[in-house]
Length: 293
Ligand code: NAD
Image (cartoon, rainbow, N blue to C red; front, top):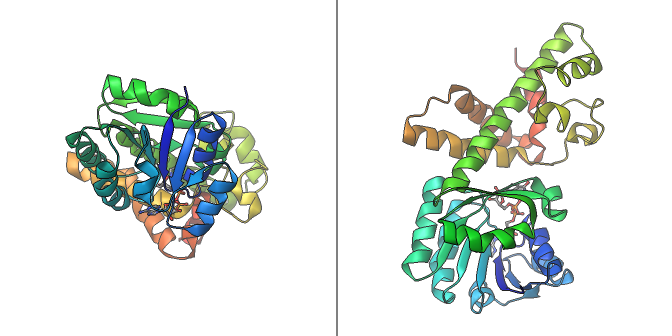
């Protein structure tokens, strides 16, 4: 079924996601503050509107892919009034509380709302192979699922509003902590005279196996496609990992959850991202861990 979709935020992730909705046969009208992002989207068949409000005026589905919760809430203040009776789907990574406030803003004026953050990064957005973690009621999820399926390989209904964001920050806390664990193991191995390849061959087929090791390996060599082989060009930027771990730490404070390693990982990534590490792939954290005594 062809839907009229308004897409706000056509950046690194939103641009290719909107392009995949066009490929799936939907009529996509988009807007981004950046002229370069608007031009790239237009080249992929997105009709570019003159403003965010204009992009969603006739939309049956309103999708947002914006940097932070502040951007999403500001946009929702405007977009929920500009659209009429639409399904609002926010795919940005934001705090659980912000996702619930955004959904309330939409529902109060007669829309449906789903939070649907993603995992898979820019390559996943380009290949339409993202994983979506969705929060909303059954009917809202049923409506959002086919739209999300056009941009991803897996769509999981995690619960009510905010549950998608909750799953996202829990997953990324595992990833942040495991990347530090893998990096520390390589640094310890170096001090013990162990080659990267030898440690990789053992750990990748033993109980140390994890995505941070076998896909995004923080040392060059063992996994030729990992960012370590191209001077840590992102990939998943350390600044975004710092942001997600900060959201997890805030959520842990709000719920009194004991996440000691998650909090330590948040501190280490925040330190790293404040310096020149922010734009590098998050696996570059190994370079600062190596310098610690
Ligand atoms: P990005 O900065 O490339 O894109 C965000 C876009 O939003 C920018 O082009 C910006 O101009 C636009 N924008 C900001 N305010 C706007 C407004 N009011 N109206 C219209 N456009 C506006 O960021 P990204 O990498 O695409 O990430 C977007 C979200 O996805 C973030 O929440 C991020 O945490 C999450 N995410 C990113 C990745 C990744 O690998 N990049 C992976 C998973 C999740």
